[in-house]
Length: 309
Image (cartoon, rainbow, N blue to C red; front, top):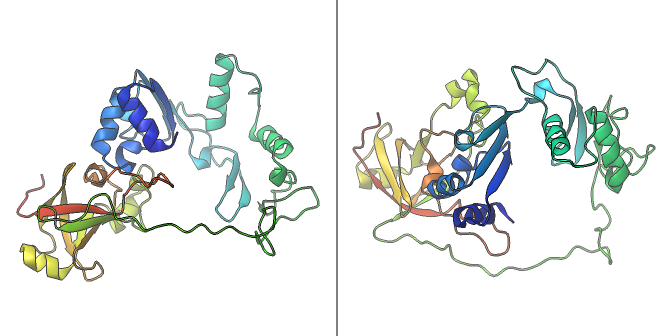
């Protein structure tokens, strides 16, 4: 199942329990009020994370995991580069590495193949079972990262993927045209503006990690709704005003930032902060092919003169 299907199955009772690692769907997913209701209907919820999250607050069991600084392993980035990670400090409190927690649970449940002692052994198994990782080991990663495919110990990795052809039968890429579909909700008299979500350079996702950094909060410590000067004038609002933003799913409060960087008819907000849970009002309707929700298009209305406590 895709994530939105999992949420729906939890809501209908077809899924009884979930084990969530390093994700905060109560803030990150659209129509988040519905997401919270769905998770509350579960018989058993386990959350594994390095900080307390809005999702973890709903959990029956919380498993404290380690941050990057407290564990060994590898990171693979979107450039396919596998890089070695070495523990800088001992795990804090009762936290443990993700791989260790999973192995302990698997062994308690009687599963075979989880008797690893370190991340080097896990990397060896990955190399054995996955051809594009065959030439990658912790030893080879000591000095520099390697980009998969890396098929043997003499292979220096693949800097450019699909340089001369694609990994298909005829070596050619397949282009699939799509027909344009209108969003499931369009602006109307009641909801005349369109809201889109964006990201801040200084915060990450739902702020679980980044909002714990004082310096980042100085640069961007709360969410604001960005609105074009034309729309601000029509609504009689100015930068610093508090407003209520409402969609068919609910309302949130935010402080206004008037800016020409946002086109007229469009407002923009991030979703980094639980104090302004933007995804309460976003639309959970999904694209039928990709399964991606309409997070970037949501008709809304704005009411001014709202006090934020």
